[in-house]
Image (cartoon, rainbow, N blue to C red; front, side, top):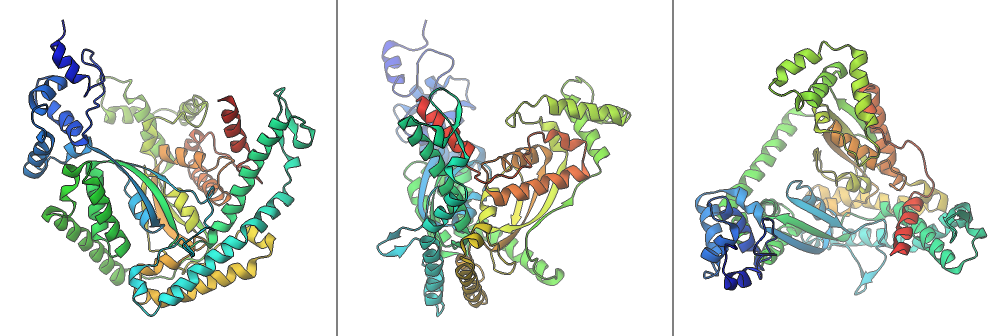
Length: 536
């Protein structure tokens, strides 16, 4: 017999996916009520549906009241994770979007791609970059605008020539496509019109990606992009405090806009981001930054690194790490025995046997999605990296690691893609970069953070990454797949080689690192996409 009457079940079915099963979805329309129900659930022996009928049905403000008490009075931040918000942000720069994407817990992001979307279109006669409000009030405004316009002009006018070069150099006739009979054939041997059209779509998409990859180095950090953000209330509240604390006007304005929109859906979860509690947090964040600046000024000296760097600078002795990894592997299957005692015994196992254990773990992986067990998190690596900013944007998507970065400058030199040289546009490319350098240095003297906006994707950028072996496996295998950008493929390969050199036994777990070089990186991936499309 049901816990609820016929009338109650009828009501409940508007707010829950069912009224009589042990597993059900919460579909009540108000996000604040969903979160409050989940949180209230842990504080009573009532069923969730009973809580709804008793407390929420007759009181439309019950959700807000609950969070006001729990968040403001009790300070229980964890309950704010039960509210979910989704925000689309359009027209923000590559400086601001990286600040947002620095937040690694509680968020999922989807950002506009510079590989599939070109930035050659104008809106109301203007290219899509930020007229940075602080700079616009200074004597540098015209030089800033001219520098950004030059970058976009050179980028835009070379899209078609670059595309033509790539297609002439790497003809469609060099590639095979699946015909109606399921056999791979050269393009010239295909007669079926639908297969020919499909093959052209694959080739055109792959070559366009290659062309845009080569030219993205010209784009300035002021380039406007779009990003979709899904996150919980606690994560959004912290993000807003970060943006409110920023010295950049764009990020302050974004904080105001994001909060305004979140107030329409999860207001109770983010109200502390700029109230007295939020302002205390903002003050703390700026104090930490200032303190670090003072230490750096008084204790650190040196000259900026020039060129690309991918250097392993911190790691442990392999024998020590292997002992920890193997101990963690077998811990779950050793009931009642402490990690300390397991470790002591593992140390006595012969090295040859330990190697076999690691190899066995590696052999169990049949594809790169078979992630190593958490035991491999016992091994850690710290890398010094200097890559072009465009490539950093790709690596920045990996969040299960520690990443610290510096301000974007022109001090570390820049990359010129080989395709730019092949097209014979070196002079134009250098003109853009040199002009950027001149304008940047003028602005930097007074506005070091705002000066970042004028710096091109092609300029080198310093950052450090600390990751465990499990995350290294994921990142390096993913970033060496054939369809990856050639810039980050090379760096990821170097990272693998560095780990392999110091940990030759443990690195066997990195089974699917691709060390090959590919001319048309996106080709096979576009083929698979087209095949899936044709099956639908």
